[in-house]
Length: 536
Ligand SMILES: [Zn+2]
Ligand SMILES: [Zn+2]
Image 1 (cartoon, rainbow, N blue to C red):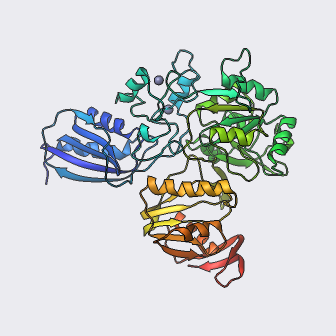
Image 2 (cartoon, helix red, strand yellow):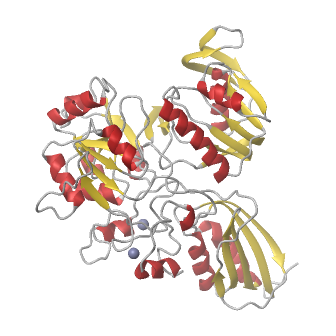
Image 3 (spheres, rainbow, N blue to C red):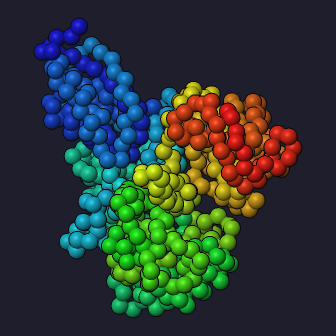
């Protein structure tokens, strides 16, 4: 028993998405507010806190800790134990510890927050029109992270040395940018430039910067390749019949719809029907492409989405996109920067080389992308008076968010199928779905698949003992699984895998009857299956 008034010291370990999301400054401020002493640190398992002070105040601290956590944090568990008071005075943030097991969760990339947007458009701010503005509440995460614990030298920002004002923000626990790993400003951070395919500068006379010059070129009908958060987009004015038709023919993409980026929800409403849930998805920090019903007479070129009743729209999610949309103030086509079925380009030289035939100009930047990540795609489905968001492609903004499993899993890798491929790794009661990879029969995509699996295994410290693969012996994902030695291999029928995935997604462990309607999948009887009722 502990007396409420007596001095206590409690050690608390916090698990979940708690690194790179402003959690330590949050703990620091909370402890300071309650006048508790102790420390907080990041380690491989998450965040560790020790607080010391009056018993009742410590209880209040532990109550507030998950309840008032910062917007990008997800507290999944708090383990606590009483330890002997040390008489420590003051509260400290301690540098990251090394060693131990890696299970701290890396946060997904997140759309620019309201505070950063205000700075972006404030002519008196030192980050006015700076396209890499971010803070602990927003900005790149998964696409720049190279290892854990999440620290600047394990991200693609390692090559940029912070200037004194940035460093001061980074070191100040009271600052919104305290330990914001991608922190940068025009003095010390990445920069954008507009070039032609040969790499020569293509700045326009009179334009204030490269982004404004790109907006002018787009207005004049150019196709511009734009390096974003997870790779290159190909952009042109959505209402420009000639530019959109040229993009479609140069991209060799006969009928697949192009996604659009609009400056605001109001701008989206001019093109599509936006219900309450659609609006929430469009403005959420994940910023997916949302498929919405097209309005009659929507002012977009015919070639944007021929024969489709829907348009895929998204709002700007990085400062660069915000600036571009503000400068051009009309909807843009923003489709993946690739040719037909190739994966989206994300390395600078590779992007320019591969897109040289498609784009007139290139808006590039020098912050490297660690992991190629496509835009996510969602649709709202309505059934029985209820509506919910249905992910069609779960990628940027959502990965590498984990999934709680209804059953305990050994360290495991599931290799997925061959088309629209994704992989999944799991350990204990947690699974991490990989980002959207694409068609593995493309050499580049297969390489991205192999690299992606390696990256996830390192990030989440999963050394698979079991590898699940499709029953089909000729899938390249199956071939990959068979290459890996010293593990238990489990062949899973394609449609049975859909049933099991559906159960896991909804936290059920079965048995259940599932109706699976899919493309062809090899059955255990050697025939090709198409649509079945399965029990499992
Ligand atoms: Zn921010
Ligand atoms: Zn700086």
